[in-house]
Length: 481
Image (cartoon, rainbow, N blue to C red; front, side):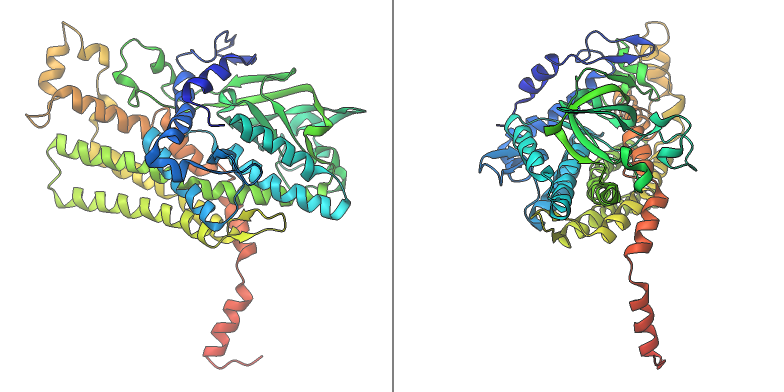
């Protein structure tokens, strides 16, 4: 089925999540003013699936049931699916101006559809059957999944089994007849409390001594023993203020959480990897390739920021200056280059033995490497165009003040035919995207999401056939052998 935004919200109200923020337990997660904008962003993925003009991008046909499903629950059956995923990411990024939080779970499902099959082929296990049954459940109910890969890691110079505290990586603490008990935590979990399910994966390639950490499984997000601790964001408490103008993005946002697993029971039918340590690296790299493609969403957010930069230039009266025009051109050049990278790795995708189509790993890593750089330059140019008033602007309360509002109206004026409040709103939007809460999704995620910049460079080095490049050079200049 395809859930509506209203059904999605109602489904979250039925969850019994244990969530803490600012040292206190939250009694109503859905209506909390700081969390609510991030829920609105996820709800947008449900709303747009019902729009006829976006049907071909936002929905598809399940290869399991033949039923119409939200693309976020789909397993890629062609390079066309991969291309539509890229276009979906940009579309939603442009409509929300932030992270819409369903990509990690989407990429987790596709990675597991490949790796569970591969494990079964080697060991005769039944992980793939378990996973496909779970996938059917996710599709049938149009669930939002939180893909959880990043462990706290503790001392990074030590392997998981060498850590003074073994809980620095999620691991098995007990094996039972009907399942396993696990303990640990997953950090930086985007959209965690807006999700119905949490899918746990190993975070690094492991060896035999770390086999207790080489596990993958899925849990309901409100399973007994799971605690969510919300991360702070710059300007997050602005969302609690009565006057909304200082928020910038009035409707949408993102969130991250530390997810603690304290002796959580997992039934066997939800376990998709159990100590097959030699496949941990395979799962990490497959997921990472998919998720590095997913950063086409930053091109969508970039569309918003470029639009804001052009608009504020017009409000400031600088839009005709040659250097402003050139900066807007450069922002567009960088933004379209991001989109090109995601399209390229999709177009060059391939079919895995399981039948799932996967992106080109080299091009996915090149694409994400660009994402670690270009949004920062786009943001710098936007701040340059906006001017210093973006960060010295008085508050919305001052703008509405009977005593000093008249001074803001007088001295914060740009173009005479543009209301001061319009200039105020646009500056706050640029601030939100480049410095405020949205900057977590646009800039910090661009740098560290789907692995650090160095992780991509390592994969690029592995994937590039440097010997073939040398052979071509030698042949052209007459070096034999």
